Every structure is written in C-alpha cells, then in structure tokens.
Length: 89
Image 1 (tube, rainbow, N blue to C red):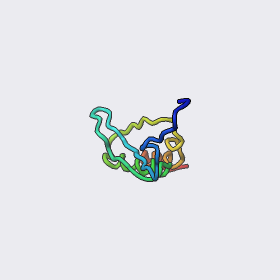
Image 2: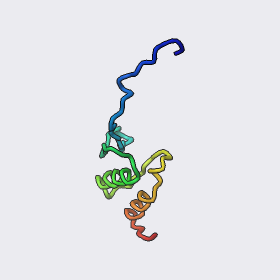
Image 3: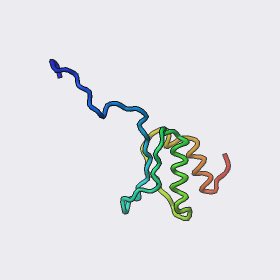
Image 4: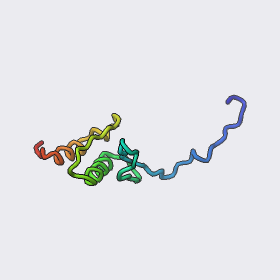
C-alpha cells in the first residue's frame, strides 16, 4: 500500500519447492500414487500416469486434466497408445 514499508512474508522465499502430482479417486476422494519431485515435465506426468494405471491394469481409466502442455505431450500420447494396444505411430 502507498506510504507503507514493503514487508516480506516468510512463504515468499522458494528454494527448490517440490512439485506434487496427484491422482484422486472421484468416488472416495482418496489420493492414488502421489508423485513428489523437483520438476513437473511431460516425462514426470507420463511416469505418474503409468504408475496410476499400474495400480489396476484391468480398470478403464478416465483422467480429467487441465490444458497444461504436459497433459497433451507426445510422451503421454505414446503411453496411452501403448496401454490401449495401439503401438503404431
């Protein structure tokens, strides 16, 4: 605010803040296979998705995600194609 000294909150210092990627089971709210790491890349999201699918390979999975570029990357598309038995390019 004008006329006041700028103050720094203790939360504003970020030195290596970890990234959380989590999958929630909608019916129960349970967290499945949380992933905590230093980055949130397309490879990180693909590994997380594979770990989630591996919890029940016979299930029909539906992932609801936002439009973040890591959620529509080639790595993830290839993973889904492989898991659906569609190995071609």
